Amino acid sequence: MLTVALLYGGRSGEHEVSLQSVRSIIRNLDRGRFRPLLIGIDKSGRWYLQPGTLIDEVRDGDAALSVISDQTKLIAIHPAAGFSVNGAYLPVDLVFPVLHGTFGEDGTVQGLLEMANLPYVGAGVLGSAVGMDKEISKRIWQAAGLPVTPSITVRRSQLATVSGKDIAGLSKRAQELFGYPLFVKPARAGSSVGVSCVDDRRQFIGAVQAALRFDTKLLIEPAISGQEIECSVIGNASVTAYAPGEIIPSHRFYDYDAKYRDPDGALLQIPARLTETEANEIRRIAAAAHQAIGVEGMSRVDFLVSQPERTIYINEINTIPGFTRISMFPRMCEAAGVPYAELLTTLIELGEQRYREEQSLTFDYSDSS
Ligand SMILES: Nc1ncnc2c1ncn2[C@@H]1O[C@H](COP(=O)(O)OP(=O)(O)O)[C@@H](O)[C@H]1O
Ligand SMILES: [Mg+2]
Image 1 (tube, rainbow, N blue to C red):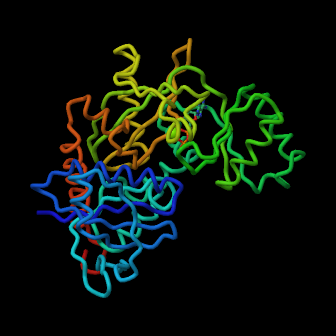
Image 2 (image 1 turned 30 degrees about the vertical axis):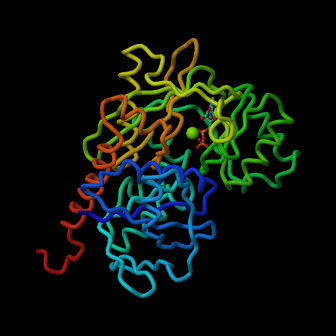
Image 3 (image 1 turned 60 degrees about the vertical axis):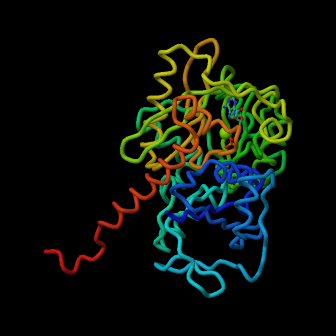
């Protein structure tokens, strides 16, 4: 029996999504092979061991999950020595970070787990950090010959102030390059937080100001009108891409409300409305995108397909995609014949495999000739 610590909650705006994701994971984890342990991170960023009874309540009942901040159950993490709780060593075989967005999906937690010498599920430090940054990931995909939505990057420091006057010059340049409508988005956020679609200069200025609340760097892109497609990718050195599926938002785009607030915000359709050739091409690009930025374990690669040209563009990658009952990532795998429980087992095995490979490396040059 392997003890798997499910790390959930967190400081990001996606705390609630994480609660939903981990709930589904508890319900689907193979009980014969894995013993789950819950480590909840509250919104202030502290880690707490959760009562074991919570697992049964969630597994067998309808209990909603939360993070209980019991000061006697505060978790400490030690360089090369894993976790302790209240001064006592806490044995854990592997960690499954079920955290979305900042401090979870961006390589920071992954670095902490590396230092603690704990195996974990999903992308490592590099793949996570690159995947989180929409500018850097696109640069690498472009260099690898993969198609990405055109964009310009703007740093906060390039603007004298964030007043309308200083942003107006930027709107002129973006309009000349791409024309309206335009998308403005933070380079490193998620859940559509700070993302706007704008039709004129006045809206553009407001959108830049909004995006800069969430990041010091933002992207401006032409609005690609057509279909929004997603594809699950699993694997370390060799990878498999599943589905793709399609998001059909009832809002202007797949904004925060469409994702989380409005139950009719979007239709999630598997398979996507694509020709066989297009679906194959998207799977090929998704697998290549996952590998190009050095992601391990899992990812969901999101695309935009323009209409009527039918040009395929990578929009972004998510290295810890949603795992809720209705999330696209597990559903696309399921549609391709990989049930949720089997998917979780595979992800855990991939995490162990990566750890074993890293353990076989030497970092000491002194006795090598
Ligand atoms: N260039 C674009 N053209 C059309 N729609 C876009 C574009 N960029 C983003 N969107 C829409 O905005 C949503 C959120 O943007 P995205 O880049 O995926 O950021 P996030 O990381 O917050 O999900 C997408 O799901 C899509 O609906
Ligand atoms: Mg997205």
